[in-house]
Image (cartoon, rainbow, N blue to C red):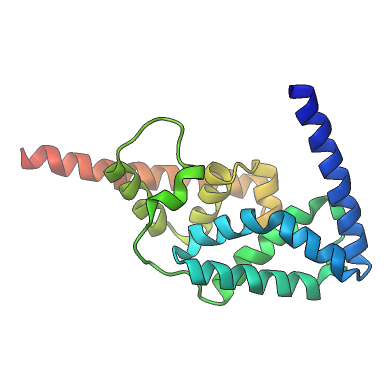
Length: 190
């Protein structure tokens, strides 16, 4: 079964690479297929930033439009996902799609931590992540919710690997302080 998944993954990767190459040569059908292949990933990522369904859909649409226009600028077809991720994040920040609306935690179930935590703890975590500076929030979302490697995050953000590591470290420290402060305040109240 694991071998079947590996073979299927390699076949999917090869098909994806061929589609990227066709799309880079101006084939709109191939580009459309690529967007369909990545639409769920792009939507989930956009929603994590915007916390709003319509804004997330708008961001994905804007990302697809910008990607189609600049498809010829993609230098390495194998980095299509990294490239389109960068376009999406830039679109969200450029267009001001980042809102602080109420969080619908059920929308985060696919990205939720492995260990069981309460609804209140999840809400506190997502609120704390929203309070992080944009670069810190981006590295946290890409690493912990999207499962990206540090090297890929550096590529998406166009920054050195060392900066990604520093942002992650600082973001974790800020989250510890923010989330720890609530516990200390509760203990003082008792």
